[in-house]
Image (tube, rainbow, N blue to C red; front, side, top):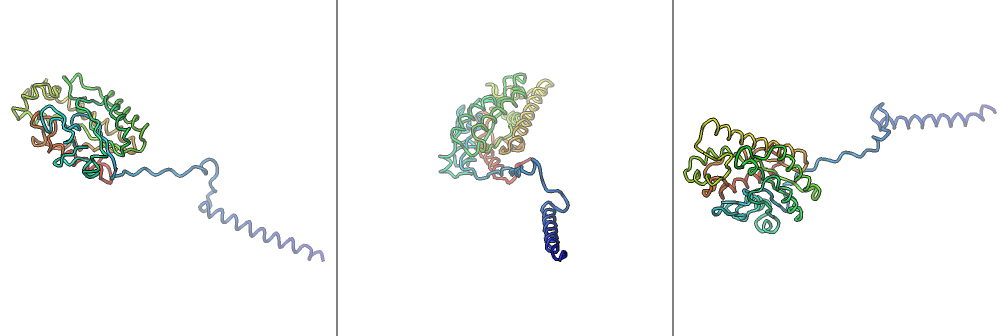
Length: 302
C-alpha cells in the first residue's frame, strides 16, 4: 500500500524532469548552441539602421555656388546667363542637370538657382538658407574658384577658413533639411585654364582686366617667381578639393565628384570666348554631363 501511494509522486517527478530538460534544450537552441542567452542592456538594443541609399531620381533641385553656376559669360560679355547654367539652365544646347533629371517642363517648375557671381565659400551658408526654403531633394554645390582667384596668391582664402565655411554651410543645410542630398563638384584646374588661355592673344588681353590675377596675371612670364606663384595657387586649389572631399564624406547624403571637374581635360571650345576663363555653352554642357553621370551612378566616384 505504501508503494502504491508513492507511485503518483514518482510519476510527477519524472514528467517534471522531462519538461525541464526540454525547456533547457530549447533555450540552448535559441541562443546558439551552448552560448548563454542574451541578457543585460545589449539584449534590448534595436538593430542598427541601414545606411541610406542614394536616390538617383530626385524630383527637385536647387543650385548654390559662384559665377560658373550662373552661366557668366556663356551668352554675352560680362553678364550672367542662368539659362545656360550646367545645374538649372533651360538652354536645349546645354541640357542642364535639372533638365536631364526632371525633364524640361518639370525642371522649369522644380529647380532653382541661388548661385551668385563673385561668391566665395564664405557666402555659401546664405545661399543654402535661401535654397532650403524650397525644400529641394537635391542641392548642387560648385564653389571655391573665387577663393583661389584673388588679386594675389597671398590673399587667397586660408584652407582652415575654407573648411570652416563649408562645414557651416552643411550644418545649416542639415538643420533644415536632414534628408536632402548634396552633390559637390571639385574646384576646376586653374592652372590648366592658364595653359589653354595664354595661347590666345584676345584672352590674354581680357585677363589684364584682373580676371583671376593670382593665377592669370602676366600669363607669358615663365620666371621662377611666376612659376612659384602659379604652383602656389594650384596647390591651394588641390587643398580646397581635399576639404570638399573630406567634409562631404562625413555626411551620408553628400556625394563629391571625385575630382571629375578638376580632372576634366577641357580645351578652348569649352571656354567662353569673351573672357577665356568661364565655361562656354559647350563647357556648361560638359559640366552637366559630368554631374548627371555622378548623380545617376550607383556608387560615388572615389
